[in-house]
Length: 280
Length: 353
Image 1 (cartoon, rainbow over the protein chains, first blue to last red):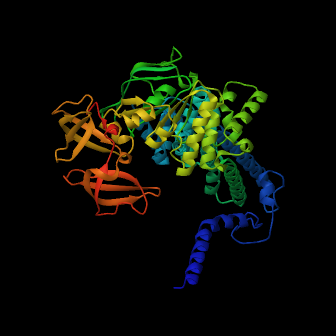
Image 2 (cartoon, rainbow over the protein chains, first blue to last red):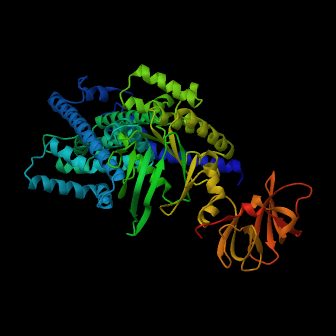
């Protein structure tokens, strides 16, 4: 095989690889603009009505009778409510998990104490645990201690495993930082607190940010664990969508999915941009 | 100025064993003195330095600076600064902010800080580099930034932990001279850690040779080189020939002694007695081809540019003798029979065998 053929083969393989990964996403995006309300796999013509409908901006099309219209609008309200719940949960969880995970990573890397290795292992366990086990465990736990299922239980539940994710990302970063940096800071007259603020945290910033973004995205995305510990009043977006699909697929799902893809891309792009700016 | 008394530090290895890193070390450093801690890795020199900077707590003994006990003081409260082996520059700050860090954390106002930073950068010859990032500098420049950062707060004592080990040979030699000049100009004491004996001899007012947590010898470079106290110091400071001798007889000013194999040497008679066993040191540059002396055969030679090192097997047998001589048309060739002449006065007898 000539190098040229080999190169073309490699190119074709790469193309197929990316097609395999991105084709499903692409299909969702395309059909989110399809106006056919009955069979969404059958292309009709271009429309934005699923998007405008999502935000209650357009009256629904003629094929739904008046009696269905109020039902439809109610479900849109529910969806927006679920989105708000998801964002609130993600915001709280990200903050808590980032602070606790970062502090734990610093403690386990910079201080030598007896049970260090033991702690290290236990920090990783929630990540390895099957979601379904964690979900059931949390549910039983909350019921046992008499805590009503609500947005609070979702936040607590998400924190239990997202702390591990932040911990791992920050730990990888901290392991690569020369301990002499902190010694140099102390040597030049900085107290431990000043060293943490002026040297350690800025050095860790890309890791902390990466961990926070990861925690945010996973929290927004989690279905299995949330399904167990979300009360009836506090449904997150993934749980809501899952419920929607069971009742029959509505075309709005494509629009929601496309918006979620867009949000993920923006968050990831933001993270990459910050990282490129920080590294030197 | 700096007084260390009975410094002890014992490490526990992960396997539960004990390693004595410092074993009752006493050391004085005077004002404006350049002292080098020299020894192989694991000799305790870095531990001693870290005990002075405060990153290592002693298990016993005291560290006093101008009479004040530092032993219980945290590193950031000690009026001592360090140049780290890895430089430890803060990558997220500009060069100027790195240099001004000690003033920044002390709350010195911006104008005064900027003035001192530009002075310090000028001192190390990096005036126009203030706005760069450390990652944009060469190894030698980073070294200078680390130096500027460490002297800006005008410490009483500057510690340098093998700061030149990452530089190439030419730059290292240049920095050695610059460091020495800087120390003289600043008028503060330097304690310099290295495992490179040449570096130690070049820069120091006094050299402290360490081994296994103990100080083997303290002296000026000349004393250490010419009058090493024992075999370890002798071998660590430069290449050398060591002879185990028994004194045969005394003839006037000279004592005649021989090795177990029968090679004869003449030593200064002062202090020698018949039948005494002594260890004699004869540096390679003190031997030269001559009409009489130790007879032997040139086994091989190593060309070093200006010098030629030849290895001579004594006629009577025993270890090869190392000789430094000048290269030239009459330089000894491998296989030549040769006599190695020397001045008996330069033979050094180790007091501690």
